[in-house]
Length: 318
Image (tube, rainbow, N blue to C red; front, side, top):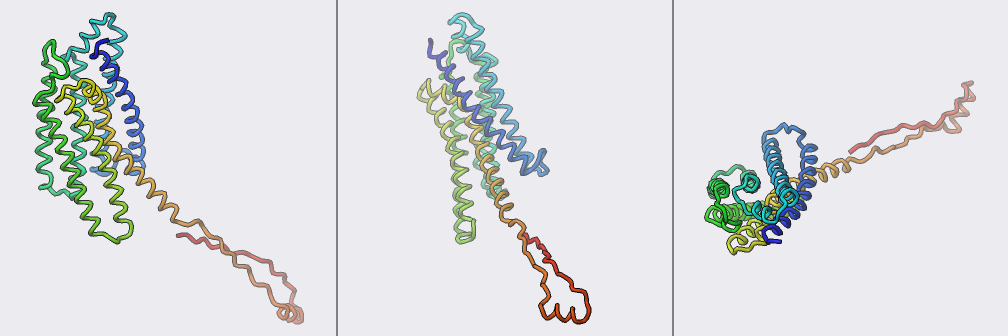
């Protein structure tokens, strides 16, 4: 079997695995999001986040569906080995061009979320956004040119010939956005930690947030660097792995943050509920009359009343 056919089969298997992981994380994120904000959310920032997550989900799902179609069509419909090889080698095929477009869309949505986090953490400070914003504009231009380049490719070209200036520029700008944003957010969190040193719960919560952001940024950077190196060094196996996992992996790096933050919301909610103690029953028995009192009552002709113990219950809630 030709390496091109084998590589596409491996790509389909890897993408199916990553898509399954992404689907679980996405459904978990939406469930936690609904518990916190409701569906549809009432606040505009939450609505924008939900729309971005939904758009990315549609792009990743479409990318996976097209990959499955290409695999089934090549191995199940086409009868000859030469036809299968020609199908995979045709870079101008609509299914291949659509997959390239969906991959770059997913990647750009991931970078847009990175910029959004940077913008929010720095309290809408515009000067911080100048450099990554310019990089994002360059990335959009390069991504558009890359899709056009794939759609106008000629017969005989293979995947590695797509390693041109457009692809290289797109990946480099994405890497710069991730590195710049992660560095700026880390410095911001460290400054806040020093300012709130000794405050109850502050440093621990910020350290946890920093860990979540760094882990997701590391996953995004790893896929982008793998894709860049694969094309630059003509590494065919790495190219198939990176393109097969790219769409789902970029999306995982996005929903992973929101899923873990959503779990944090749930944990804080449970802690708040458990902090309210259960009702405490406090019994106050009614006093019995003393012997002298009973004698005086008896001597005065009063009827002897037998007092029963009665309880008064107080509910004490935190």
